[in-house]
Image (tube, rainbow, N blue to C red; front, top):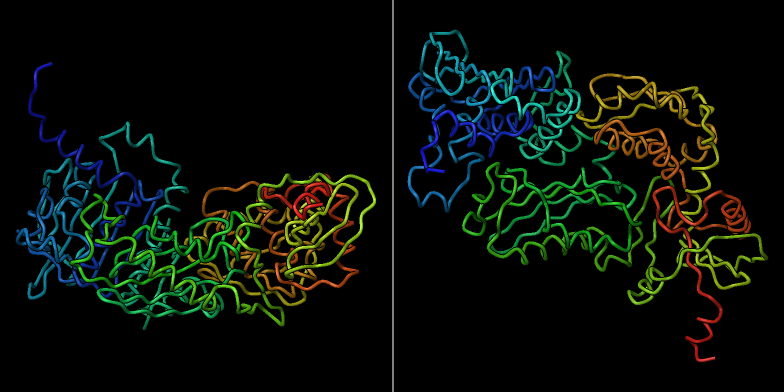
Length: 550
């Protein structure tokens, strides 16, 4: 086939695909532009998940008529002048592609008024071309209204999720930006309903509290470290605030939300012996870096960056996590709610590998005897075939999971006084939609404001123990699951059972150990916990004799 030049309309749509793939990327680009325009307050409204409408309004410096015409062209920007500027980037946007890309695949209206001007100007753009324009009333600042995303690229529009799912993506993206820039005020609405309205925060921890609730923020462990070219302000969640996903792992690079990616490997290694498999630490990392040490020009949407020395950054984050966990990461118990303490198991790495390689056991009727509890986390059981090492949390989790899931609604223990709980704003909508389904699990919730809920009842079999542990953690975990999509009831029940289960580090009396092992052995699937992790490992007596030379 002969080589030919592409038409300009095709070039625009191809370029748009690098920057805009769904409403959340549109929201990210427009809000970052508003922040670069020195906005103190940004308001975002979405309808139809941001597909039908996504509007971003700010009180920043605004644009003149001529600047507005330039802004919708490709490779135009106010943030770079010379090639050398690429090595000293301090703004969020700089490529000069975002607005042009959006205009190529949506119907866009821009309304702006710069400081010193007596009136604003509006232009309407379709397929990258100005279709109408004229004077318009507005305070100083800019409004960008994006309608009918991908109206002219039907193949790409078919790949979008449902409006509720796209709304979740938008709110999740906005949550990261709101966390990244505590100095700005934000108002966010979805389908005409306000989901967030926060004033400027004095520091990152205050912003975390605005989004996650003061109780959650108060349990985070602060760490501040300064080294050549780096300044880190970090807040780490203790092990009991671990999540089943990485949704609450955040890295903010000089005010820019980026993916932690491989940089978080050192943190994961530091937490490894504290957390069961499948659980992930929560952390909020605010890292200020000398622009000479980082390249932010490696990803079209600027979600990934490249450091001159990734190893140095990984090591910095690893040492920060160890400091939060108590120096060596082993010595200091981490307090939890009430009078309980959390103590990490301290098996040597070689022993851990041997246990992981051991065959998960399938308990069957036989004589057995509880030898005792070790490391506050494992129960040793002497059996006919070998020594069983039972993870007390996983065993209790299996017991609780099977206790009340017979297919019928779970009985509820109603509270005389409801418990008020808070979740991040992007999870509140998902939790609100799931209220009818949660009633089948025995969880009685009702909405109580922007991101608050009243808990009026809890599954009766778990209520007494959970009331001592607190309800914020399990509700937060359920909300996290719902954020990923409409989770099945069995999956939500797993998280409820996990929250109520005996913890690692929780001392048990001999009678409690005996009762737990007896209940665990009576379950239908004793080999694994509801998340699929092995509950116990057996060391056959013959293997043990061989190891000690008998």
